[in-house]
Length: 175
Image 1: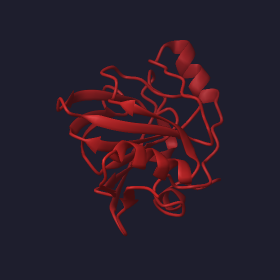
Image 2: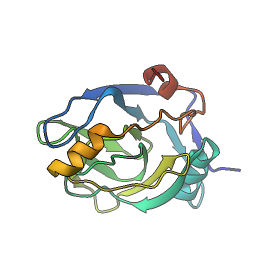
Image 3: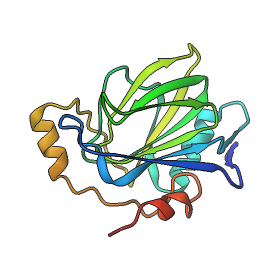
């Protein structure tokens, strides 16, 4: 039994980012920010969050923060659950959007979308995972990495990492 449960409903903010020449972003799949979706409880809410994600096929969980440099993943999507603290993350590269995230928020980052920690509280704790056992590749936007990412074909996951059936299916089509 998990000690982290999704709220019955949460506001989901979609953001679409276009290729900036360095960070490919993802012109087809929007970044999804689920506001206050995790009901954090128990002695180890990070483990509960990892179990919640894994129950919907998002595995390979890790605990840490968000890197303080622009990076993206060319071969997999990523989910981040904010367990503790606050972080400001810039999504979409240098001309992207800075989004504040608090404990209880979840972000689903499509393959190719850049992200960078722009400042966080000292107590920040993030749980990350990947659909279908994906392995993260960390790219920083060199010309070769950009070309590789643009050429990559990353499938849309079958399941939403928080609800199973939910916002991911509503915002990401398998076209």
